Length: 319
Image (cartoon, rainbow, N blue to C red; front, side, top):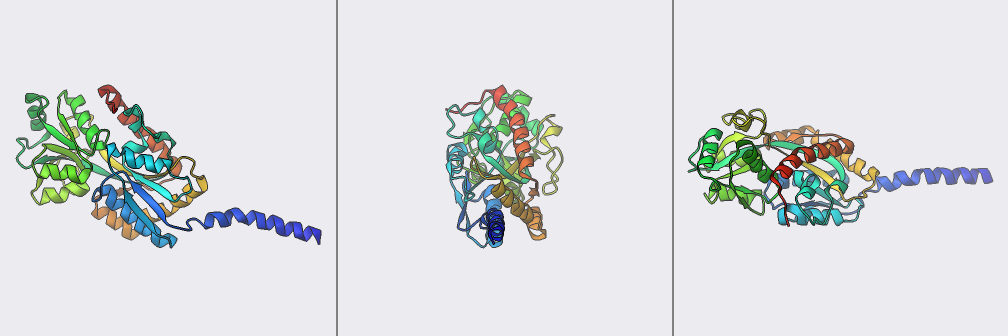
């Protein structure tokens, strides 16, 4: 009889962890975005949030917290309890190289818990309608002839758009003027309004405006032409060595349990590889990047090294 009681106890203890893991999530899950509504990141996050909500049977909401070069939203995500109920969907900077620019950054990008790579998308070099350059060579000639006068928009210091323009300055030996905005949509609107000369935007949001004649895309940041704007050659054809591709990933606060990160990863990968979401990603010109948390961690490290060289060479710092 005593042996039977011990056997029952051992079996009960062995299934508790499984039940605890299966219980996640038991309430609302929040996804923090460090950018304004309407951006490519915002569209992507809301698609994933909707599908996770359906899969989990619990509400999954997106909260936009923009400002301070994306550090405000990133800080809130970083400081959230590591219980899986606050997640972070981010472009490259906050989870990779942002620490290299801020002297007193209130969080450590390397300490985020990598959960999943989501998608990548080529960046487009977008110029205002009246800009006196029809290609990259003419743009570089204009910049060389007018040092510090050509203006470019970005989502803030350290954003992919900002560092892409810095990369052009370094490779071409030109000087341009940076005009930061509070998100990709305000930055693109500024180019449409003629307030700034150019902006490195994702093809997802810029191609419709290019096709409508509101802006012009004169090149793309990928090493090959994009199928959605085949008339625009890669910047690298005129400026060898240039590359600018935006990607988005999901992370959690430091200390998030591997079991929870793995559970979320598996569900996100299921979503990204589903036929209907794959078609939706294609419509948005987004390329899914399914993989494990370990693969996401390695990719974060590689990107930190790539853009870190640009940051260090230009000595980009933010107070």
